[in-house]
Length: 188
Image (cartoon, rainbow, N blue to C red):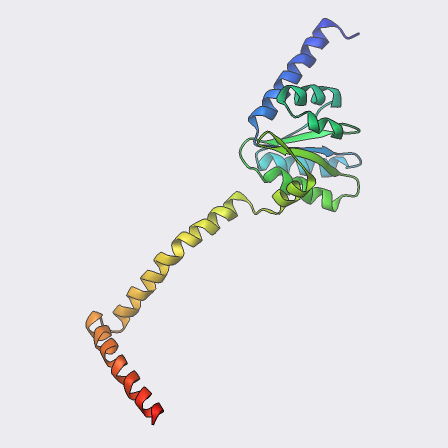
């Protein structure tokens, strides 16, 4: 039987992990068995830079934290070596980094996860892993917003290059007359 001090520490750890899970937008459980120290260090660095918290926690403590957070369905994944990766802001960062690492490793595997308080399967985790980073998504959105403005600016510049609005209006007036002459010639 553990001492009262150890029991209190474990209860506090379960409470901390429960709050961490409740406050995160996404979380993944992984089996880190068989990775070496260098790979683990690089993985932790990549996760830290992406704002993902990665912690090795005993399965029994995780089980209690998941029960407190209402994610009991994740308890089936709590066997063997288990680490928890959570992100408070970026939905895809943990999945992208951990699935990429799992693809390169023979023993490291993603077991399961949750998204916005709901347990998700490996199909959704793989879909999250394929999403581009937030910066790339923002660049794509800004590019989409900028495209019409850039097209408008090019049209205005073309008018200026042709000598102004008067020359463009004259060219437009001449164009229908030329098209009508061409149509009549083709009909004959």
